[in-house]
Length: 307
Picture 1 (cartoon, rainbow, N blue to C red):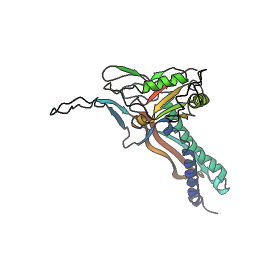
Picture 2: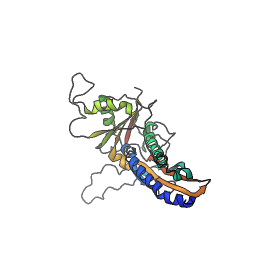
Picture 3: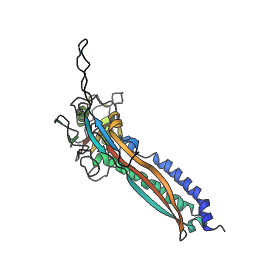
Picture 4: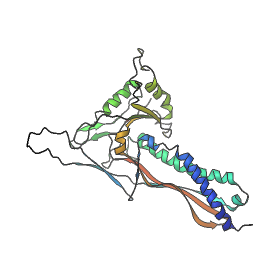
């Protein structure tokens, strides 16, 4: 009969193989990329992200006159600090000597599922908790979905309480196309729009986007969201809670999000062990180090609807 250390040495590659398989399978169900968050690997513990204003609209310049020059103005400096999340399991001598591999398989799979669930949950919080600052905020203390103060003192809002409907979706998209930068210069129109809803609003969202005609009109006029150009798609965020938040909905522009929304990684889900066998038991640990965040707000519009 193999001694205990040899037994664990022989089992370790198989245990890690289970982790690799489970991690690969479950990672295909991670939702954060669909919510507009771009991967960023943190090179320091507290990475900072800073927005700069544009240069404004070009000025008319006569022959032999100097070209118009203008300095960038620093925007909001936002720190997105990753947080470590962990889950530990015990693999015992009895599990190995009596070939309880189904149990080991479930334990290791549970670690992978727990870490991925945390990633999905926190990614969804960026949106449904985005009307406050308890989870995340800009460096100036503003929530993602709020009335924002621009550098010139003017304000612009990207939040509301409108119920998800055909006309309200049109109004929200129109407002996004009028978003301005900190120099009060209008941004380029949105070109890669995405509607995000909780599971409870999936069918309603599909009616609005996919019906042949306007689902809210008896006249059944042409549906502007179903015109063959495919300029807006739908994502169901399964990690928005059913209580309170299931009626919320969000519109994001993926091109703007690519510059403004971040998923900052200290490290992605990994699997370790403590190398020590105590009382016939070896501890395996799973961990992930990450934080979703944003450095600007113009990529999204949130509606905290109650119905």
